[in-house]
Image 1 (tube, helix red, strand yellow):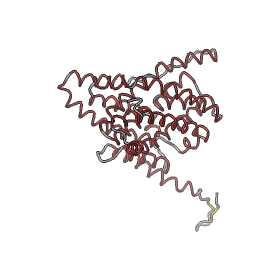
Image 2 (spheres, rainbow, N blue to C red):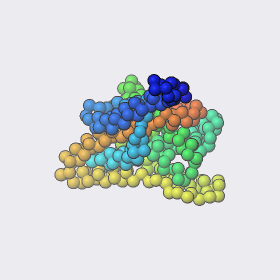
Image 3 (cartoon, helix red, strand yellow):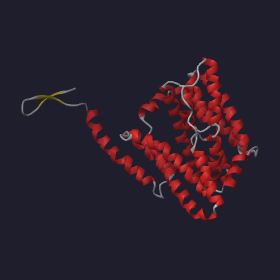
Image 4 (cartoon, helix red, strand yellow):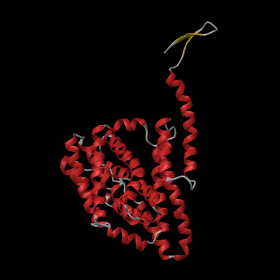
Length: 338
């Protein structure tokens, strides 16, 4: 630390330049995080812009509210998904979900097998590779969080897997809509593709909203039906871990209860027609809540989390994602699914 003689003859030291610059950054971030959250609910702010804004503030200035934003992100996402059900017909939701069952089962199985092979080939730690594969196969960070109590990986392994999945989620939100238009996918096809190939529910919904309103009607039920596979997967993983290590799981997997809420709200507006106008209003508010959620998700990413990812886990995540997204897109174009 530099030593300086001041006018009064006293020798004092100056703090490092980084410390002097940190205070304005923190002050700016204290204002920009709540301001960005407030602006995200406005109609003219898109899902992609909200995510990009959250990422920009977090990576450039930091997020002094990160403990709070992480705490509220998952409940807000769950409530928004439940609200989306109020704008949908339950009969159509069940029909869409049923049509995507076979493709969902096949893609989950292929993804887990391919992800395990890639992790071994690239030298990724076993638990980290498994978490990345699970996040890619089902529903991103939600699936990873659900199996943590069962697998009990180290905190570093969880951070690496979540960071990898999140980075790819952010990319998908910007890349998928232009690719869908370039290939000539209609709204139904894009909704199905995004549900099969994008990790997190939030990014699936965000990409579908950017593409076409009709795409959301397909993307949401298919993705939520896919998320239900968290439950049997955690049971299988628990049995596998017990057989491998001889120890039972000490925690219970998180259940995707918000899916039941989504179905319940869809059932209400379907069976009670008088509620449909209010249901459409609620669904519109939920779409804005999802945009706010994307801003918070972006704001939750820290520079340390990005640095912790590492080249090999990121390579596994990218290769696995490209293979699965490419295979599902090819199946759609060739009319093998859909």
